[in-house]
Length: 316
Length: 279
Image (cartoon, rainbow over all chains, first blue to last red; front, side):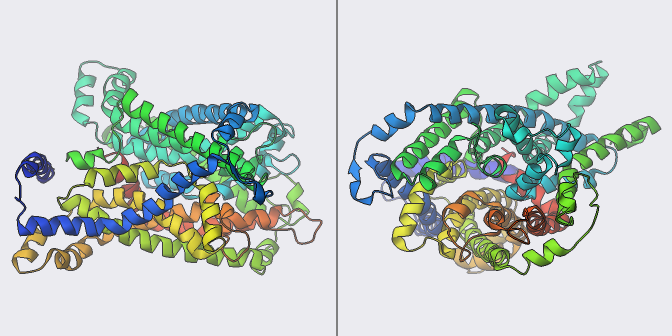
C-alpha cells in the first residue's frame, strides 16, 4: 500500500515539472515512455478498430436511407431516421420495457446480492460450498439458462408452470417481463454478491464491535456503519449492473423473441437489422442506445459521485 | 469469527439459510439436467425426475454437425481470442502499473468506455464492415471483436494483479544489466503468471457466454458458436419438439463452466473483485 502511494505521489509531482522543463527527459525516461507506448499500442489499435471506427461508421449509416433489400436507393437523408425512430411507438415501448427491466432487476439484485454477501461473510460453516454454488449462475451461459427458464414456464412441460396451475406467463406482456426479470436476477445476483462481499470485507470489524458495545442493534450497525462504508463499492457494482442490464438481449431473445411487447431496445435494433434489413434505422437505434448508456454513466459518475472504475489506478 | 459462541440454534439457522442459497442456485441447473435425460414422451411430463431416462439426446446432438462443429468453433474462437487479449492486456497493464508515460489516463478511460459499451451499437456497423472485408461468418470475424471486448476486462484485472508484484526484483534485474523489456519477460512475467491465469479464465468465460455477436456475425456452422447453435437444433424427427436435444446441448456447454468453477473458484473470485471494487 505504501509503495503504491509513493508511486502515485511521484507521478503527481513529476508531471507538471516535467512539462515545464524544456528538454528535460533523460535517456532512461524517454526509453520508458517509448516502451509504455509500444506496450499499449496493440491493445489500443484493436480497441479502436473494433469500436471507434464502427461507431463513426454507424453514425454515418444512421444518416442514410439504407435498406439491404433496396441497395440502389441508398441516399443521405440527414436526421430522418432519428425522426422516424423517435416518433415511433415501438421505440418508446421498447425503451419503457428496457427501463422497467433494468430498474426492477437491478434493485432486487442489489438487495439479494447484499443478503448473499452477508450470508457468505457471516455464515459459520459451508462458506466454500455457498461460493461454489453461487458461481454457477454467474458462469453459466445466459442462453443455456434462458432455455431452462423457457421450458420451466412452458405449460405441460415445465415444473414452474405446473406449480402455478399450468400458467403460461410467457404469452402475456407483464407476466413475460416478470419471467425475464426473474431470469436476469438469478443470473446476476451472484456477481453482485461477490462484488459486495469484497466491499464488505473492507469494513473494519473493530467499528462493528465498538458500535455493539455502545448498544447499537444489528439493523442500526448495518445502516449506520456497513452501508456508508461500502457506498463506493455499492455504487460501482450498481453502475456495472445497470449498464449491463440496459443492454439486455440474450434472455429476451430466447424467452419471448420480443413478442407481446416484451422487446428491449437491443431487440428492436436487432430486429430492424436482421428482419427488416434496414441498416439506416438499425444504426439510428444503436446510436440512441449508445447515447442512453452515456447518460446513465454520466448520472452515476457526476450525480451520485461514483468513482469511475480504473480512475483509482491513476490516483494510486 | 462467530464460531466462539455459536449455539445449536444458530447452527440450524445458518444450515437452513445456506441450504436455501445453494438450492436457489442449483435448482434451475438440475432442471436442465433432468430435461436432457427425458425421452421425447417424458418431456411433456413436468415432474422434476424423468419418468423414463435416456442418453438419446446426448448421442443425438454429439452426432450432428449442427452442434459439434459450433462446439469446436466455440472452443477454438474462445481460446484464440483469450490468448490474444491476455497477451495484449498484460503488455498494456504492465505499462499502466509500472511505467510513466503520457496518455495513460486516456487509455484507462477508453478501456472503461469499451467495458460499458452497448454491444448492439456495434452489430450494425460490424455486420456491414465484415461483409465488405470478407470477415463475415469466419473465425477471425468473431475473434477480433472478442479480443477487443476481452481487453478492458484483462487490463483492469491484470493491472490490479501487477500492482501487487514485488517490483524491487525488476530493479535488481536492471542493475544486473537487463533492459526494461528483458526485465519484463524474464522477471515479471513469471511472477505475473497467476494473475494471467485468472484473467484468462474470466476472458474465456466471457467469450464462451457471448451470444449477440455470435448470432449476428455468423450465418452457417462455419463460424457459429455453441450458444448460437442451440436455436438451430432439431428434434429426433421433424415432428418432435427439440426440447431434449436443446437441454442436452445446454448441459454440454455448461459443463466446462462447472469444471472451471470447481477448480479455479478462488482465482475467479479474486479476479472478479480485484478490478472493480478495490478503489
